[in-house]
Amino acid sequence: MSLSELKFHGLQLFAQLPMEGGPSGPGSGVVAHLVAAVVFSFLGIAVLAVCFCLMHRFAPFSIVKEIEEDQNTAVAIVMGSVILGISIIISAAILG
Image (cartoon, rainbow, N blue to C red):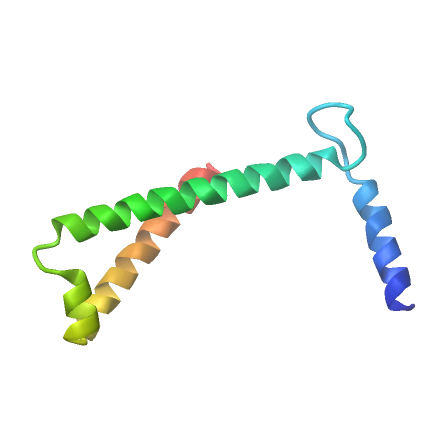
């Protein structure tokens, strides 16, 4: 099977996906899910940015100075861990 046949077969499968949310055409459920994914992605990134700004504001030291100038690896690991933890919480909240 050639690459063009695989692409055509994939498009046929995409067109046969079940419709959700109205009779606007084949695959409209997929488009709705993609739009929702993009919206929730931007919302999650915005919440993560707000949390990072709050961490930066309430830290008893300058995070930028500690990580960039003083090369403090421990602070970098802790900040990375906090960001990962907040990201997991945000993704769980989005998934429901």
